[in-house]
Image: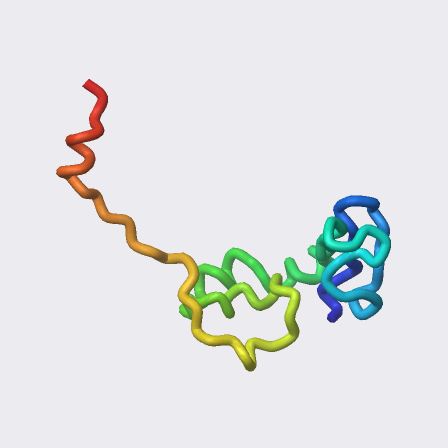
Length: 98
């Protein structure tokens, strides 16, 4: 994937290419979680404020430019964000500082 520069172990700092290892650092085992190091310069060309403001897709696929996958082909439409907030006056009154 062009948007991923490398994977980096959070425990020992070892770095790997994305197809070189799976899930964890071979040196550290289960404790060696791999951070995905992105090419933010490349991503910023697609994932802009305008892209997010004008993108009417309100599920997780709107963040595809930053997700460590190539395609949303197998995604289920998981709703993420844009959850409305409601003022609940009874509860607010109960917890007001007096």
